[in-house]
Length: 328
Ligand code: G3H
Ligand code: 13P
Ligand code: NA
Ligand code: ZN
Image (cartoon, rainbow, N blue to C red):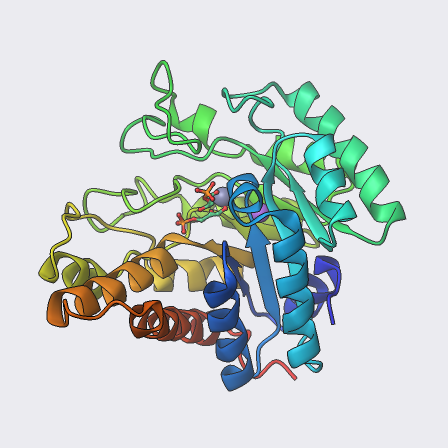
């Protein structure tokens, strides 16, 4: 069944594990996640960005998710709005069957950044009050996603910040986090610790200088009962970069968030880990391989099937590493 996210996060906290939240835009991605969940006995968080909802249309998404729930009656599934930019976006997600929403008030509605604290509290609280009445969970965000290597040069919306931000401007402040959770009543809090969206997070394997896992520990000490969320948490595996580049791709060498670092976060209150880029890379590598090796093929199933399988393997690996596998 489709369930509110709070239910899964509470279970994860009680049993010391984390849950991957995978982004989707289409049927094959949903199938990959559900097959991985079935094989590993995992609960599921599927999330759709505003761009995903626009691409796939709400009615398709909703009915694909209902199909997943029908096909796997024993797997609890959360359907989450990723990076909602306004109370209206969050309500329209709820109206279309989402069981959880993120109100990302760390940015202004038009994506410019950063929004001030009072604005963030105001919009997030508005969403929490409305969503909770409807049995829907809420994730908020405090702090600014963005690389400490570049001072936020690569912002979460993909646009560069107008001026470089300092470490303290980028990272979530523990005092402010404590106030924010009390003032908004969110079920989960996304924190900024130096990660950014997309493949190009770090120019070398990240150290504590650029990936502030210690911030998670500090925030968890202040807020031991709050479920923390890590965004920008793809690991950008070398082998997926290599497959893409071997079959005609042109990705520059890059580094993501090592799985061991995410596991440290899970020891300190991280319950939701957002992963999109790794799955995009798995799909692209698999499709490139079919195109390169068998250019005579033109039936979409000939490349979408291996693409789905490649994404399934990434999902299995993350579900296992984060500890949600074998949950019940
Ligand atoms: O928020 C980042 C996710 O990877 C979704 O990306 O906005 O391109 O759908 P998107
Ligand atoms: P990645 O780009 O690291 O996969 O992050 C996805 C994310 O945070 C979605 O909200
Ligand atoms: Na989210
Ligand atoms: Zn994100």
